[in-house]
Amino acid sequence: MAEPLNWDASYAIALSLRRTHPGADLDTVSLGQIFRWTLALPDFDDDPALANDNILTDILRDWLEESLKDGLGGNRPST
Image 1 (tube, helix red, strand yellow):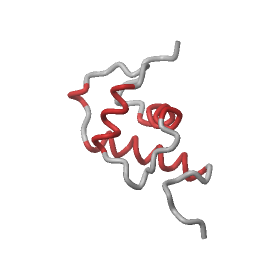
Image 2 (cartoon, rainbow, N blue to C red; image 1 turned 135 degrees about the vertical axis):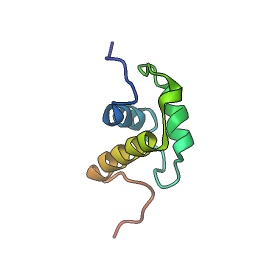
Image 3 (cartoon, rainbow, N blue to C red; image 1 turned 120 degrees about the vertical axis):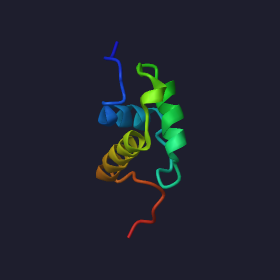
Image 4 (cartoon, helix red, strand yellow; image 1 turned 45 degrees about the vertical axis):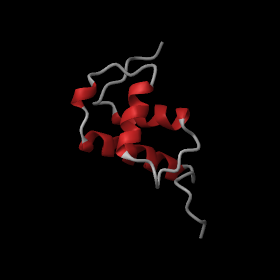
């Protein structure tokens, strides 16, 4: 079993969300969706009340950066 995720692990959460929601359009994903999806992760174990916009934005940014590395970011037309 993987180590439990908490709000301090934004990069690990981003990787888990990326695996769980591979088709997500990161250009339209809201912080509310990030919050709900994070709470639904099987390895997530932290107090939902500790989440804030900065943490959720960090998770989304980490997810976007990883997706861009692999050429999978959002539904952007290729140039």
